[in-house]
Amino acid sequence: MAGVGTQKVFENDRVIVWHLDLEPGERGATHTHKLDYVVRILAGATLEVFGAKGELLDTVELESGGAVAFRVEGDHIVADRPGYPSVPITHSAKNIGTTTFREVLIEFKSVVPNAFSSP
Image 1 (tube, rainbow, N blue to C red):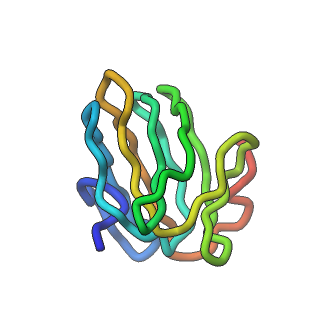
Image 2 (spheres, rainbow, N blue to C red):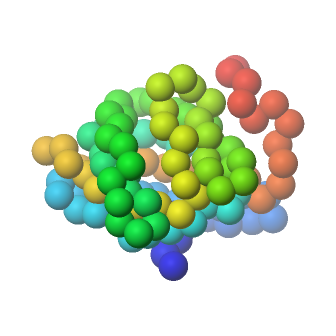
Image 3 (cartoon, rainbow, N blue to C red):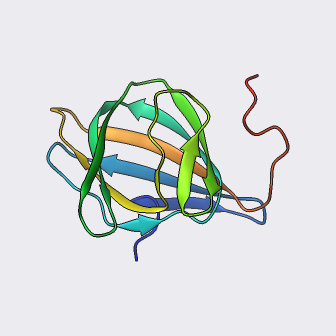
């Protein structure tokens, strides 16, 4: 099973930081989220989300400059914002847009109080 990004860029005792880049038409590896995390979208695109068996689950439009926190709840990940689908912890994504999708993903190794509150 792959990591949650295309490149791990930092890790310490509290966090793991990943970059994720998906070119137009590219599908990322199937991966499993075990930790709560936040993403910062550097370059947005439209993504299709697939389940562990390759089944299409949803399509999401992710806008440049956005940030979303996710928490693991059992076998699903849940976003801190309405409108984002709850998806299984094991999934993959495909960029169906016309531009490269880029994000920074930060996993939290321990529970962070108020991780879902805005600044």
